[in-house]
Length: 76
Image (cartoon, rainbow, N blue to C red; front, side, top):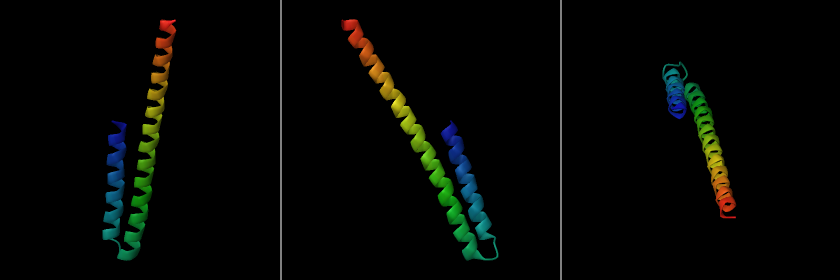
């Protein structure tokens, strides 16, 4: 759910940046700024998702190791 909220927030920020560029007096400067803002926002979103996936993967790996350890203890 939090990922969806961050995704929607990134879409709104990017849309706002491009709308601001569309209505600016100097289109070139506006679009350059909008692309920079969009690049930063989407890079942060991708980094957050990647970090979250890595954290989940680490937790699942630790749970597998613990289950394996407990199975070996029962066999003794």
